[in-house]
Image 1 (cartoon, rainbow, N blue to C red):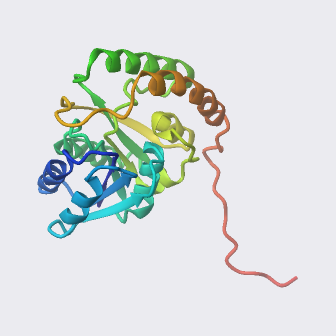
Image 2: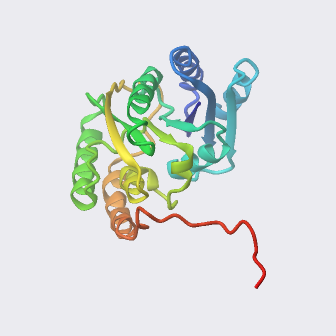
Image 3: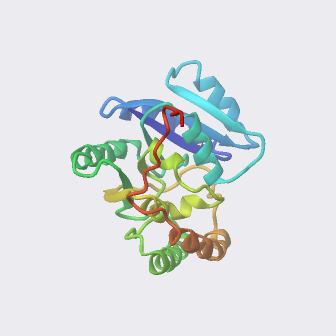
Length: 246
């Protein structure tokens, strides 16, 4: 039922440990597939992933020839996935795969009342350096004020979204920063669940102050414009199944 989608860029030191944790998490919730998207890594990430495929049957690997960004990696993973639900997470071991179960349990509890829901993780405690915390807090406050998406921590990658709903979003670069607003735009209801957040042990972050706060502010204007141009909730196109003679 669940495909776990993991975008990575130069995360060779974290690949094997995270795959083991996802496989372990699959014992407690219906994870049927792991889709790694290598976003043009220049280290041993791709080599390690292809080696892991020999011993982990549920693992699939998608490769970008050059780095296209997290949003493009999410889209490639979603298109390649075969399961109904997509669980997105970072590849740096800061998200705990065991928390996928928390998101799935909330989805199962609420889906009868709201069939089109997405469950978004919110980090209870941030384990990042001071600069990342400040830049993320500023970006989140600005985004929330403009988009009013009811989400305090859109930077948490851990999200559970129906594949159909994700692929129905209006794709643009950096959409991953605005997923709550774009889901609401398309009539998807949001649920929020507290999740854990671990300190990074290996590797370095690929995102800093400039691309989180300043570039994100520029993208925000486009996201706000797009959010206001949504289809009516009762929009249901009708397929013509049979031609009728005049």
